[in-house]
Amino acid sequence: MYILYKNKNKEDLEDYFESCGISKSTQNYIKTYDINFNTLDVINICKKVVDKNQKRIIILHENTLVINNFNKELNIMCNDDKFKNCGLIVCGNKSSFGSLNTKTKVLKRVKNTKVKFKQEIIINVNFDEKYYTALYDDIKHLNLNTYEKAYQHWKTYGFDEQRYGSRSLLPIKSSKYPFDSFNGIILTQDICKCISECFDPSLIGIILEKEYSQDLYEYSPYLFESDETLKLRKVNDCLYKKQ
Image (cartoon, rainbow, N blue to C red; front, side, top):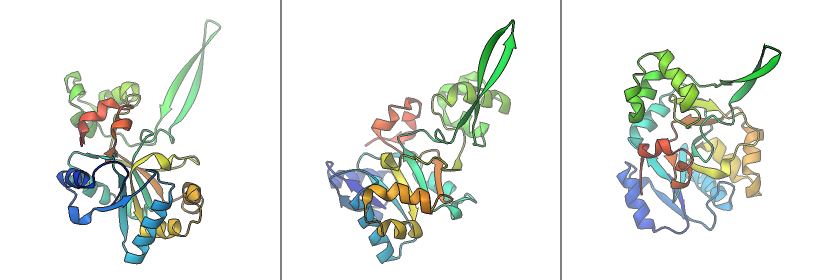
């Protein structure tokens, strides 16, 4: 695990990540002047990964917050059948999970010569009602005891509130995915080799989308957040261990 840090105390960060279940022996710190994915520091990290023959790594930064029960959630993700085909997995980002892959269609309805519009959200996520209702304490009183009730609540309210609807690995299909606003990313050695050969850090995201468009994924729930990104989805605040 590689952690970019700029202003915070390294020892404090070591203690925080260890409290989240991440051993200090696996933590590698990189002093940086810019916490960003498209940087020379990330290229240098990838060069180290290739030299050390490491198969997969995680890159975090000093403001990363770790999900409760991190090791359990990480194991669940790693045991997903799709995991072996993932070259890069975004496990936390400023954008909400799946938002850039969500399609919206508009249905026209004509009544009394007036045209009304209804938006229907089409989401490429397999909704899990048991996971959804168990994860959020504030909706348990709503008695969402069937798939239909839980899914309707999520589609009507939860999706807009950026609640997690399932554990899912979703292919990244956006040509303008904001890798630079990451909170946590998992990379394979092949991806690291590609990045290590990049001569211009600003091109990292562009090269990945061009060379590895079939290998880029996003994971729900986000394993990593930050105080800044949780402001955008306050409903998930209690799911993360604070620094």
